[in-house]
Image 1 (tube, rainbow, N blue to C red):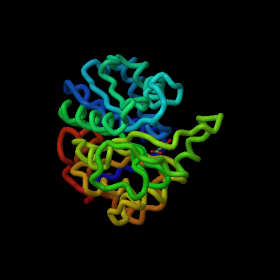
Image 2 (image 1 turned 120 degrees about the vertical axis):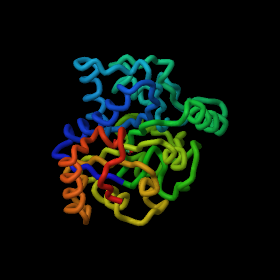
Image 3 (image 1 turned 90 degrees about the vertical axis):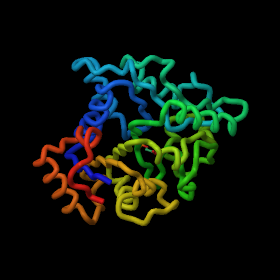
Image 4 (image 1 turned 60 degrees about the horizontal axis):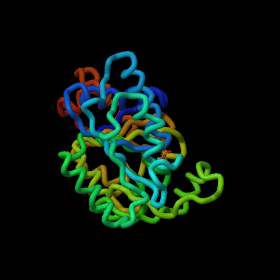
Length: 272
Ligand code: PGA
């Protein structure tokens, strides 16, 4: 796991965008896209580079992480609509290459299996962007999710429904979702998790330094071949080995291991 400590949310977005930019400019790529507040600064920076630095997504295929069950794609709060609003509609990603689970499918179990198989058929995800929930979830893999789970139907935790209630003023927050499983996410060639804010600090500490446990689903990234965790000071504030991460980051920087390099070349100095 590589920990990158940043000064601000904008800096987090810039560093994550560096990694994605480097891969996308290499040629056809498969990206895994997350919704939520955490990746917004990353998307904003990618949109800026598309407009100002000729970063093209025309050869990208994108799979979203999750979707509410029961919402048609055109519903304002579906994650399909959200990812279009926050990213896809502002770049040149062809819409037929934006692939999401269908929350209104008549058979959700079959839809989950179809979606998982579609990711595999596309050759797997090159870079998976992730946020983390205050309860340690990634995607909608709530605490006690199997560490080897595949895309499936899940019941949302009360805490997650409460977090998202602000988007559903009628109080009709869905109870079920479709989410890529932890085993599915683990197969991405590179995982980039971004986190900001004090309310994420405890979950970040458990993910990076706690035991690998279904109690903190994000801790499955300790078992990932190449996971990069990009944090603002508040999200990093509970890490006990901060000095070590800072020292390794400085040494990597001296060696020219910029944030784009982890994709192109294994960092010389590993943090674990
Ligand atoms: P957030 O959510 O990015 O909106 O904080 C992250 C998550 O719950 O996965």
